Image (cartoon, rainbow, N blue to C red; front, side):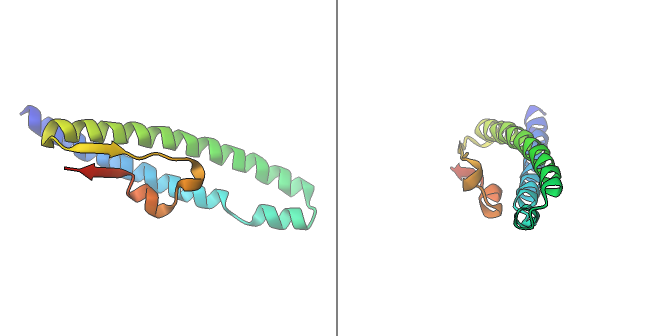
Length: 111
């Protein structure tokens, strides 16, 4: 029965990890918007200020999702070691190293 509980926990942790990765991708796209560059070119200081504030909030939320995703990846690695005796390496990097493809392949499983 204990093994079944761990499998449910593993499935739940993997699902939450994937959702967090999806949210990080969406937030990265929001941070990459070109509206700020257009506002800077047109010298629209009020609009630039508002965008900088929004970007600061989005970046803070994205950083919280990074922490959450890392904790879920750690939990997934722990459960996989216990259940399947797999060696799991958690790959992490800086913001510039992440892309949508990298986030989906954050767990590198080596049986």
